[in-house]
Length: 261
View 1 (cartoon, rainbow, N blue to C red):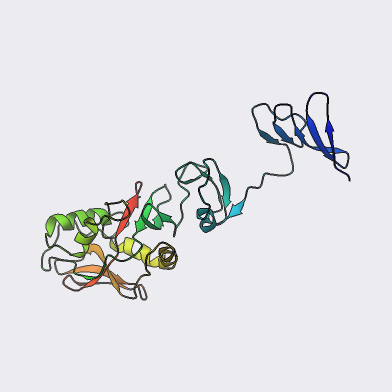
View 2: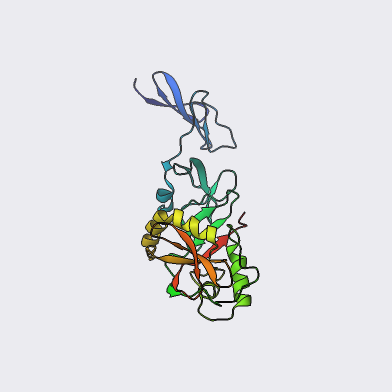
């Protein structure tokens, strides 16, 4: 049971326990575990037919706390149950998709929706208004009636084109420059609900990045219901309704990364 080191004639150094070779360092510095002849192309070769290689295991939050990760650094993400590597710019899954997760601080805000194809939606870390009108009461805005995820950006464009009132909810988002990004928009009805569904994770990350929690109040969506009303949602209990456009509600801007499906 005693370990000993033997320098052999070919220049290799072997480490043995229980009279069995465990590790070899060859003459050019390549290391072999359970092999006496590590491949010349490998700095490290591990040989086994009964065991695997176990990298450091950590959550997404713990991964993000790694300071200045080296390009090629590898971990196993226990939040997503996927191996990740750092490509020098961002964490990636081994299949080449971005390794971001709901609640991550990313590209100027906090991720609250992922489309499963490498795209997603990000919200700002704090509200852009504590009380703004939707705008143009009595006027139906052509094209601004999208409710699904992926329609908020076009809704905002259509509102800006059809309602020139400054300082309304969509206008605040469309003219926002925040954390080096200028492509913010007012979320659609379903995008707003996705934020509500993940508000706990968003609030936690916001607090760690100089932001604020959602208020127990109504927030505007960009989804128009008629010329008189638009959809909004309370972040107190999650209920959605349409209300007069002249009423004031809070505003939280969002933006998309990569194509959102």
